[in-house]
Image (cartoon, rainbow, N blue to C red):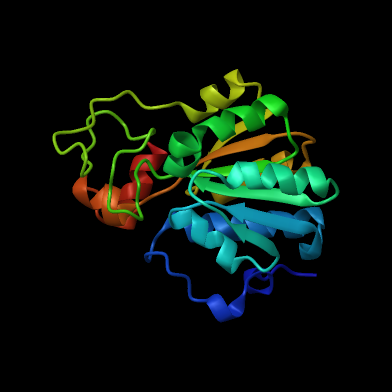
Length: 224
């Protein structure tokens, strides 16, 4: 049977609220394509999302979904997985949601090796709330809270999670969909905590103020 993304989405919720050119839509399609490729019924999938642009994903994917409070998606997902060990539990967070207010949950989920698939959509900014500095904002980049350029060193999310004991840790970008699909499938098949640091673009806020206001400009920056 062929793959059609809309078969896995809540059609009444479309079109999405994401900005045109946003990488979140690309990543969402990769997630549902991976679910299709590994042959898991949507009845056996639960998507848990936090706050931020990435949190909208729980509204769009047509399966069991939970939209949680800021930073607590992994805590909710841990309870869901422990009480439903046969289900595929996918967590979608942003870099602020997963590494700032929810950073403690990320390192402890990795340490406990709970069988959760954690996709961190890393756009280097708090995009939904108008461009505050996040833990992954590169030094020197403009944000509304660092108007002369961020002076703080940024997290390497993969190194952080690997150091906490994460069993499957990978990085991908929304600019290489084939690689993203392959990495997601490997992680979804892994038994234990899987962490995906997926670089994505926020041309509307991060890009526009850092001279990359067009989606392709942001995508080229991510590639390079």
